[in-house]
Image (tube, rainbow, N blue to C red; front, side, top):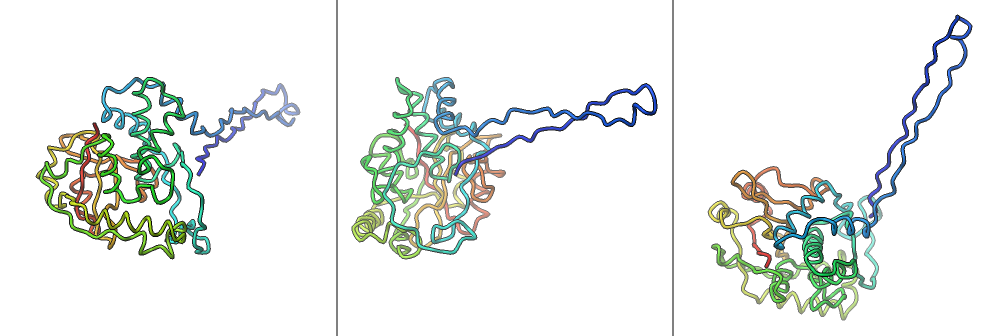
Length: 303
């Protein structure tokens, strides 16, 4: 998932003036003007650059600043339902040992949100080191900071729930007019034989299935898509937007940050459609309304 950017060397001709016809027939000398080709920045290089930016006064200000600075960064190459890159022979992904994946060059919608929050937390801390960034990312991404496949917050309503428990945010969906969100969550266990290689491990399957049952039992709220215009004024810059969906067994289809512009709320997000980090070209209410698979939103406010 390395992002590679190369520069081509330009070829210029050195023209000389001849003093007679015979001189003009002589081969003219060619010289090459070489441009230094910079190697792709590493995650550490990108991190160090971001840490040189001014300290944000609030977490919301930080995620907005960092989010905008990553506009245009790539979205990972699409995969098939078996986890293989498109065009490859579909094969079930092997069981892999879980490890913290740090990638500041490419983002999906969830890792974009996670990384912007972790960068902000790290910059606002007294010691903005790469190790602290990884610790913050671990705390955000995994239940009780345990790096394990079953402990990863795969379902985003669960991500909101767990990060609210540790004081990172407040789920404000209910207080701004949310309605009950009653939907069973079971997509990962249902797709265990085709989508998630690690689910083939029996202990992991049992652990994930237990989490799904717990998420399903929780009282949850959402703003139906046709009600978003009514509550738009209550959404602030940097609020986390989680888009609910019709997919059976799944709670959240997409996520990003709210961005107020010209009196409306847009969303800055890592887009699979545009293959990069972008701002929606229409207000959030219109963005959700025109997608038949999307049903509404949940809203988390960073502390």
